[in-house]
Image (cartoon, rainbow, N blue to C red; front, side, top):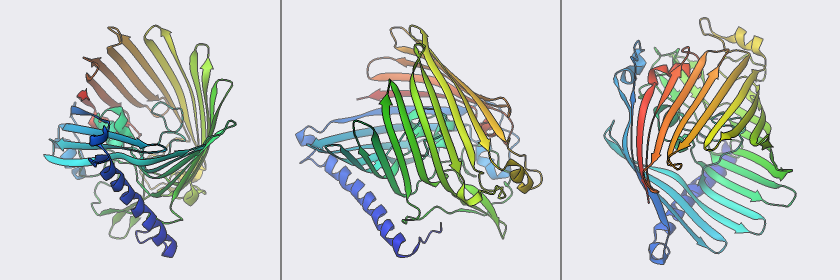
Length: 436
């Protein structure tokens, strides 16, 4: 997993990764070309959006490595324009989503290529090449077999939920058959989760805050490091069933101490296998999902810097209990393997994770005023870790094209728990969006 790749095979896959990026650029040019685009009625959709979120509560005390996060009150302050373009020529199609935004907190403007891909559909084969957002599994903000990259900074800061997912640069091929459908995904260019870093706007638990020398190693494009994911799915007796497999990497980094001292962040290998089922029971929708995470580089559990192998499982149920009032509940668990060895390997003073992590979630949605007003509440609680996250939100559709939302993200818990470490980022947010 060094930056230089692996011999000739690495060079070949790096060329493939560059070709994917070049192909994405070609798709954009093709979409924007007057000859093939607007002059022939290219559909252009999108939105204008303004968003702001501010930290509430006192973020002190705070480590010096996160001094900016301690003095910065605003997590979001931006104006954003998204352009969504699509075009088809018989069995060939192309689409893209491009965000242009101004970040008022840093007074910077930038471009975010959300998606851009080429579709080739013929018979039972559906081929998609380029940057694409992939979503697998049945969990509600709980991810087991959805192993694709996520923007955790956007989620914590109060961006609309769609910005939790990031695009993957790769190839997806789906084969459809009456018995079952098979989707295969190949991603030669690894994209990690976006996570809080020292010097950013977010506060987080950093037991090594005094060490400022840090670097991150990402897997270089090669045959050996290409992520491969597969999903076999079909509907049977009204139930959506799926099997999953994945070969790749954890998308959140692990760390090790190097001389200096220097912190090295890296992404260990991961093999994941799972299954899911979702169907109607008692006038509601029941969900079941299972997964096994095989941490190839620490199967013995003796390296405290790398996630242990674990089982993950989810049970969920959602039902409309009366007109326009929907409730949903989930139980999610993580069972860590080789927990005794993990505890023995921990450095002194580092609090251990539980052998089994239990999580309960609830979501309530009430629609009012002819479904133009939505009152929502999502809560997540880990009873054995004392970890709590809840998100109340009010959203009003002023017209078919204009909506506004206000809400908050509240984090409660110990500094070393998944959500408790972000308690200093508890925020209130507001979003206004005009779609066209």
